[in-house]
Image (cartoon, rainbow, N blue to C red):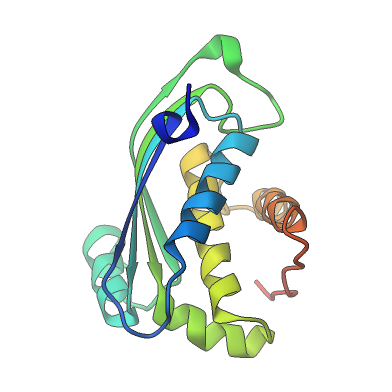
Length: 165
């Protein structure tokens, strides 16, 4: 199976705060899904601004604040024969949506002293990991997600700046 058959990544960019390298986002998304051993995925990635993500955050999660990334798992099937206890995405067929704020990436990148493009890439990776089954509701889960994020960035020779939770 060809990787473009295995993983469908559709990108919609409706913001003007940051130039978007769609090829890099698609390549990174495929890398994350491959490294998680996801069987197949159909992912919609929307890149928007703070006002739009705040509206979605209010509408779907009843949170009245700006955020960096929202992810929605629409469908997930698991081939139990392909499960891997160390990888939450292993054997899954996933359909989902990831929504990221480029405006937030520009703002936060200044705080962390790295590029807005890398900050946005982190949001995409974070959203994909949510779709694979990682979450960040407990300290243990937060640490597990941070480790996976860093492992992915290590493959690109980048270090994620330290963040306060």
